[in-house]
Each structure stands twice: as structure tokens, then as C-alpha cells.
Image (cartoon, rainbow, N blue to C red):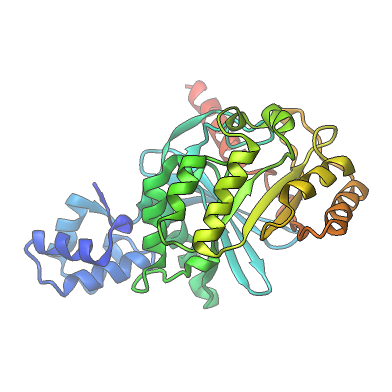
Length: 351
């Protein structure tokens, strides 16, 4: 089945012409798809065209199956169901400047970072560009009643975006299309654990998104304890690739740094990190670890967070504590999906 969310306007037009329908119908179909409507809801299309489309295509590759709303700050966490039965997650956060949606790029993840829930069961499969955009389209439909729009997108859900490179790049171009969601690339952040060849390749794509690098350690010795990818690419190689991206795009690089008790959270680690980043146009997001029970790693106290930040600031490194949102709705990224899978397995075992 063709995923209509994965088609450009030109590709939609070709599909309509292949179905022996008038060219102008393509714009109607495309508009309905971008509004999150299924084929049966495309009321200005003749029944004959809708029947043809239902035989060859699906309008929405992603459905919202479950929604959790934080009682603390209104953050909304979604469980999305894909057409093959797999599940992924997304999170909608509201800030003063508008809505930000965190989307997934894979079902699970194969990077194996020790602090992450998304990678517990490995990577089931990559998402298509239409499925990634489908997350945006599904949530945007919910916001219609508020006359609001998703302003920012962060590719920080389950999956390593650069491990699904081609689909992610296609998604970025689709999301940016002014005839569709029309989301500015400067309002999109892509998070990577540091796949150096893909970082360098991405620097040449001409897509000025914000690159967020999950660093989480000031040296290779510590990084290898918590991030298997560091066995392939050293901290220095990751930083060199980040500098290439900065040079070619002019976009400041963000470094994500989760504070893990007894591993990377001391002031001596902050001093080492500052020395590593000195002179680079960057910003550090300091993140108190959102503990995953299966990982047996602990977060830090408020005093430790403050001390880490003050050490970076003393060394003239731009840094802030990343705001924690939705702490009361299924914990870390990947936890809702895992809980759902367990529930479904338990139900299956009853029969």
C-alpha cells in the first residue's frame, strides 16, 4: 500500500494521473492527507476515486491509540499504532512560544545506550518517511480544535535518526514543504548519538536543522561505559564532525549531557567537558537522568545539577538545565511502548 503521507505534491499528482483521474484532484487529496483525514473523510472526492484510493493507498500511516496527559504541566504523551501492529511514542509539549512535538524515527533502537529505555528490546524496524510525518499529522489534527499548530519538531523519540538516514532526510523535506506542514527547518532538532559518517553526510544536505549530539561524557573512557557507539567513534571524531556541521550550516550545535550518579556528574567532569568544548559555538543541555528501572542507573540531586552548571558557566560554556516535562506519564521515552507490549503479550498468553 502506498503511504500518502510519504508523497510530495508532485508524487501525489502522478498517482492521481495513474488512476486516470483529473490532475486537479491531486491537490484535494494532498490537502486532506495533510489535515490528518482518512480516505473515507475526503468528502469532495467522488466515490469512484475514493474506492480506487482505498485499493492502492492508505491516507494515514499512524493512528493515535492511547494518550496520557500530565497533571503537572499538561504534556501529552501518545502511543501511536502503525499499520503492521507495531507501536511507537511521541510527546507534545507546550511552551510559551508554542507547541513542540517529539517524534520517533524507529520502532525501538539498536544503539544500546545504557541509560535509555528505547533500546531495551533492540530495533524492530525503521520507520518510513510517511510514518514519521504521520506522527506530526496525527497530532496536528488534535490541535485543530485549539486553532494551534506544531511550531517545533524534535527527532528525539525512540530510534537513532541517522541509523534511518534516507527516511529521516525525506521526512525533513516533506515536513518543510510549504504546501504541507510548512515547518521551518530551523525549528527542527535532530538528535544523534554520534554516527560520524552520517553527520558529515548530513552537513552537505543543505538542511539547516539544529543538530543535537548525545555526548553524555567528557572522555572516551566514560563514554564507552554507557554508549556502545563510542567503540566505533571517539569523542574527538564526534566533535570534529560537529565542527564540520557548524562550519557548513552556521548552526550552533547542541550537546545533550545526562547526569548519572557516580559516572559523569562531578565538577571534575564539568571542568573536563568545558576544556573539550572551549572555543566552539555550542550549547550544553544538562539533563538530570530520567531513571529507567531496568538500567540500574541513578540520577543526581538538585545540588549536583547546580554545581555542574555553575562549573560550566564559570568556564564560559553556554549551558542550561533542560526543563523536565511530563514526569508523571510513563517515565522515560520507550516506557509506554514497553508497557503496552507487555500488556498485549499477557493478553495473548491468556488464550
